[in-house]
Amino acid sequence: MQRIDTSRVVIVGAGLGALYAALKLAPRPVLVISPERLGQGASSGWAQGGVAAAMDPADSAAAHARDTLLAGAGIVDAEVARRVTEEARAHILDLTVLGTPFDRSDTGSYVMSREAAHSCARVVRIRGDQAGAGIMRALIAQLRETPSIQVLEGVMATGLRVEAGQVCGVEIARCDGGLTASCLLRAPAVLLAGGGSGGLYAMTTNPPRIRGEVIGMAARAGAVIADAEFVQFHPTAIACGRDPAPLATEALRGEGAILVNRHGERFLSAVHPDAELAPRDIVARAIYAQSQAGNAPALDTRAALGPRLLADFPTVAAACRTAGLDPLRDPIPVAAAAHYHMGGIATDADGATSLPGLWACGEAASSGLHGANRLASNGLLEALVYASRAARHIGAALGSPSGAAPQVTVPDLPPAPLPNPALVTRLRHAMTDGVGVVRDAAGLTTALAEIAAIEAAAQGSAPILNMTATAMLIATAALRREESRGAHFRADFPASSGPTGDRSFLTLAEALRPIALETT
Image 1: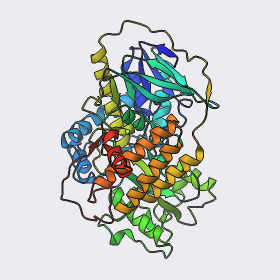
Image 2: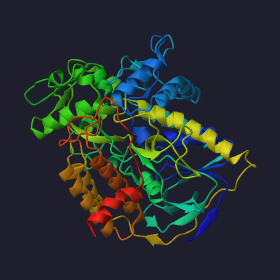
Image 3: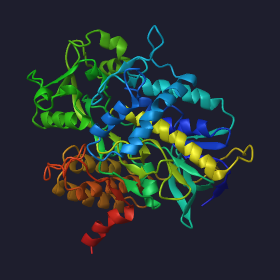
């Protein structure tokens, strides 16, 4: 394998966490690795709702932390919630200085939306449903003007190199127009900020590349993975046959939109006192139950929003138009879809992982903030907080930068076969069928066997092995948690073990142990 040495900090990913960390590391030389052109293919750019932060004088970080704890179903780290919510306001102000065009009132105050399980309106937004895209445009503009940051577009990470127990580099390959063999990029520090795992499911709101590969490469290197079983299913993906499914933002329900079935019945009122604004796991299971019963759940925006939907929520309006739907005439058909992974690479308060030399932030990481059920719009907030912390910690670990670093050039590499799409499709269906909204031991065991068979058929393809590693961890952690808690629902163990519970921590070696025993 060819080798490149660099003194730059390597950041894997090109979403909010990656770009914010790169800017916070400046003027230290940084190399950002992005499979696509900046702004394309990152989950952050698809985020509709916004960033949760107590910006209203009537609100408080303490209230935000309480809502986070309640939504997280008993396993949120209370100290993490307190610190993150206290930092939220500073990051909103920082993004504003960086040029983010948050919605503002005539008096200059931030316009905020209310989303599920929040006790008040505290989600700072951009043009109603374009927060992720607006923040990303501002950060990319800043990034392009920062001379210490180099971006390698069309390059993907395929693995981590560990020597003497420490991460010392990343294996990278070209992926623009095909896939090449990997080469080793040695670096003094690596930050993983490459997104979550939603694309491991057949029904998802995530960009196509977001299939757990970054979590998987950390797991294959030996990193501890936390809370892998907790996958959040968004209740209102637009059910129009597209892959990935467009999203009907939760802010629509915050504005008064209601969920009905094909009989016109508003079914959430009988499920939870907060009805459409109940925690996401409860709404997602109610939607799933209606779908399974053939009742065609749908989101009715007509009375609450009417024509205002077209101007105030242009992303949703455009998705409906593309799918041939008219939300002014009919309710929008919806389904529960894999949306956000609360689990990920276990990190401490500084974003450091269990492997020296490796940090993580954003959806690829698990900080303890989200617990069993992420509070709406806390995802972008966590990415901001931990990107900043990781940058600060990396800087302290490496000491003062010695000056400019040479640009990294990826050598010509021989072509390599692309991941077998049939295996990827098999994996996605195995996860939806056995590790989806409602789980049980039989389905999870079947899914684990199928994941193992897919891995055996992968013929060493690193992208697929990274996917199956994450899938194995999700399914194994789900099988071991014999209770229902938050987004993890076991039909064979429908009750929780109590108001509070324990987080799960698992390595890939531990996850593989039961499979090894069953096959001997």
